[in-house]
Length: 87
Image (cartoon, rainbow, N blue to C red; front, side, top):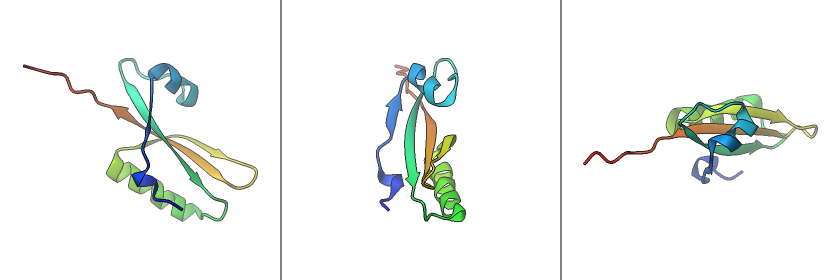
């Protein structure tokens, strides 16, 4: 399995974010990362990977999908903070 911490995140506008996670707060864009865990991945391994993303990358859980084959797809999101020029 490749290192998901090194994969680029996708940026999504608030209108598209509503399709994945429900209504997005006004004034904020989110970027999403989709992680796929194969069938043989234990719950503790998946939990550890998600914990690392949350602690070190600032990601939060947006959605989890469990397929019939046992594959887990997890959507993580984090808010895009835009810097404004002051001078």
